[in-house]
Image 1 (cartoon, rainbow, N blue to C red):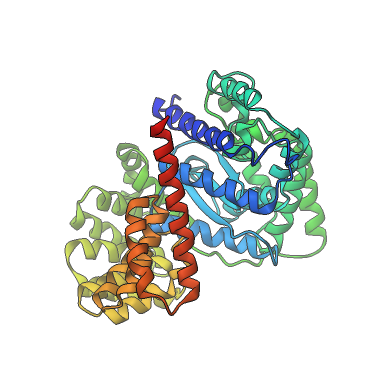
Image 2: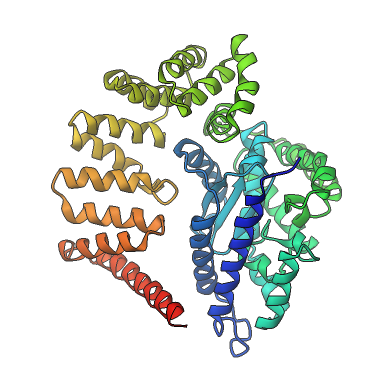
Length: 479
């Protein structure tokens, strides 16, 4: 199976811009520093790579899928206790079985890998493994082993990646877009340590330990296809899958002998989330072929998938019909009810939308997207203070779902809290890497928020970063 050539183009762009960061950051990584790569340096590097990823990689912005993945990832991260990282999780919109982490606590999982899964525990196992790479600072340790890389040697490695040479298999999967640019491939010892730590985190979070083995087995089944593909795969940078399955099975047996049982309640409806992602982002014809026959036989997940597909294509009445059917069969799924609420919103049936979204929240008060959609309905109906209350409850999810900040900015403006409105809009545009708009809103917010030192500090920091980017761009034009 061949994938679109644009995949290769944006991938090369990510590598190129990451390389530019490394080169422009010298002497940050210079002989004088002798690779004294601090945690602060790591976070700065991660932020720089993240910006380029936001600009050039096709990330899924579907609020339900993103917040679900972040909820699972954060459950795993909490097992670490106190940590210096603030982990964030993203979904790459490509049908490729991949996952990777970049410095600073950012973890990316591809849609193609998620489509292979059958449970929340399998998703948790991948996130636990990648999170373990970051927490064990494997990227730093590999950099330290490499000591000093000159610009010339870095350029040679990049050439190998671009031309499909020995470095091609080491590209950005499982260590970091930036770190892999320097050919810093995880060692077998790194992988084993990440497996062991990830397995422990998975079990402590209450997921079945077998889920890591089952996920690894599915990847192993893809190995022959991936070996013959030019697309970098999860297996290419996570080697020795057969051996790892064996020792993971031994770890499962040991865990089972302790008498402990999996205890984690699902954080969401994984099959519904998976169906929503396929219906929204896969080829529409393929999605219809996948869900259509089963929907006719009365399958609730398939009916949901067809409803989500109809919603995507603007067939709102058909979407409501399918989603009502799914809601009748899965009345305990906040995910299904929330999507039905979205369909009612598209029809302008705001009372119906409000009713079904309140039902979704009655099932799960922590649901980010029902709160978000209910806020939109309340805003439309003129109940702005209540809308703001719902948005405030989910504000912590704004880094992963920036539309929360955007809507908070709009509603705050409507209730005449202008300084806070500009602050939230500034955050939104900064996360979208629209630095001109971010600069405008932060500049407007600053004189209106003088009584909040913490907010002023945030504004000054962002404005300083914007000025750096402006000077950098001006310098580039000058050359």
